[in-house]
Image (tube, rainbow, N blue to C red):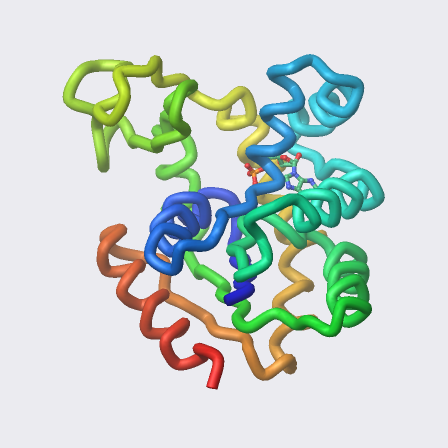
Length: 218
Ligand code: AMP
């Protein structure tokens, strides 16, 4: 299954994509995670991307499209994948659709997770991520057992650089201007699903699974 997850920052795309990837045994491909890895390595790509990421701006389309196409050609993506954080502009979506059709492939499902703005800010400001395994926690809604220590692997929990108040506000604005128009792009595709992203992680997962079950290959 080839799945695209849409939704604003803080909607829970990463959390849900991780669980769906496990259930369907497909890789979760997150352009944000790939970029953060490059930043960690201090590669040329990482240094360029960081200047945009720190401000909450989008990394240029050309860089992102190259990253994603390279990743899809690597092993493990032949059975399908779940894309989390890509595409984020109409130009990326158009380039992706045409790259897929050149390969005689298409996306099976596009899921848009809908969450109110106030809730997004609450979620993002308390979010903590494990530097080792990437597991996510929230200081109020899903706190780790020990302060700043990952329950799963014992790694250190950090707040992402771009989860501070000022950058969050800009990321939400960038989302509204550059990413929200994608809803329109995919709505007529026949594979678009809107999923209510309010409630518990389990409730949202159930809604996601229902949407996907309705769209499994015939
Ligand atoms: P995320 O982890 O998906 O919230 O992404 C973190 C940051 O990485 C974003 O704020 C952007 O600066 C950059 N980024 C991730 N994915 C994309 C994309 N598809 N297009 C442009 N920039 C991206």
